[in-house]
Length: 153
Image 1 (cartoon, rainbow, N blue to C red):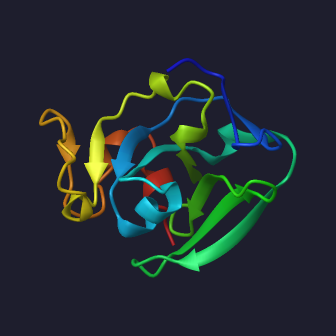
Image 2: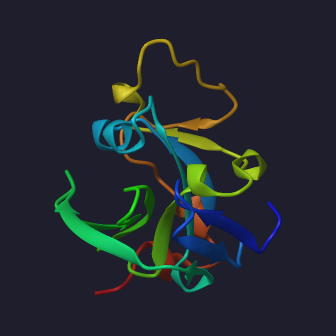
């Protein structure tokens, strides 16, 4: 992955820039992500919050309570409705970027798949990737800064 990376919503009114590499890239097969992406899974990247910035337009946000009980704030374009990224209240220094909105999503190197107990039956996962029945364990991805993944307090 080359940094910086740019992305935008479907209509192009909201654009963003990512200036640091992702900690991890994965697909999420949970029902919420299937509905969010209108597809079989959502392509996600966990990135440093300070490295992701809106460079054009204004994104609106909404909050929902995830199955974990955490608040999940999602940012989206008010004109076309494209979801761009989210923040889990348990990890305020991380953003989950919806990598399908990147200008070059083919540069994303997926290494894991989560909530595969919800995956559609015709999806075949690469066996060399990390596969999680439920939520992913990203401990190894945050080895250099565990305070980002598991904040104190």
